Image 1: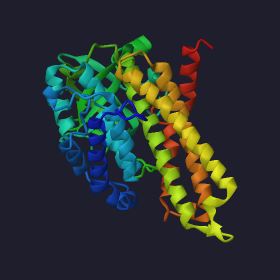
Image 2: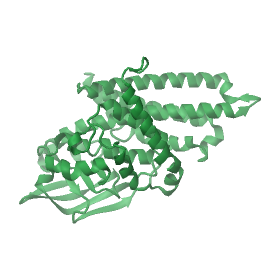
Image 3: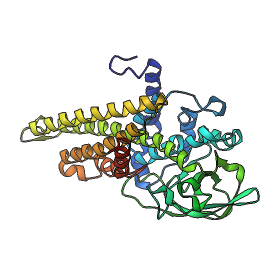
Image 4: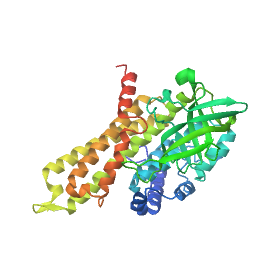
Length: 383
């Protein structure tokens, strides 16, 4: 264990070196092209699977590594070095958003059919939650799965779905009892080759451009009832638990991204001169970066506190919500200051800070908005 980072062992640091090498070899050199093309090759999932990155916390029986959550922390922190938030998002949906429900609650058959190939990167997963008229208000979703014999017949639509255009299956949140409110929501696995499934628009976005984000449509999609994950009617509660991992990943990525952006800016500030000296030597900027570094360190400690609780399976909805709120709001502030530090060059795509500025804006929206996080924290703090 490090004296400064007691959570990370020598094995953890060896894993960090491996992930960094993978990111710097397989992702970072292609980031500009992927952004320009607004796409990346699906082969990346298989490459990540071969490195064991897509099932860090899952059972070894199905190809996982059964490691602690600090390995996930490292994986998320190192992904930001790709400088391609869209590709990072796609991989994290695969590893930490669309598949945890299957790993936790799926049957052996479901794990063999969906989870194991997802861990190998052979099947690409998407998580189907948001709808055109229901985002944060999950209980208001309208996608409906009606029983018919031994099947569910599914009708509805989803939007803002990462991996939507290329997915092999959707971990679908839908209503099985429309009259029961949040008690009528279930989780059903839907293969994308199901008759009646279609991809609508590939959505154009402000940032995360390499990630495919799509509308999905379901018209009389028939899937066997054995694709129901867990208990019928418990989907809302499963999703709320699943959100904790998703929000924790967002907080960790936010801190790592902010740190990297500061390091980039300081390097730029030592190379760029104005009025006869490097711009980083002006007190107004030195003091601003001192403040930003302090705030990022505080945010990281809050995120690590939540990771420690989550890893030990201690109830931590309040702490995860705090971390998601604070880290993601702070990162937008940090990257905005870094862009300002670059002056006019910060507004040019020639410098990666402009991409980071666009990409960071998603952090306070996805996985639960900052407003939702404040509501959760206020309720759990009995305000």
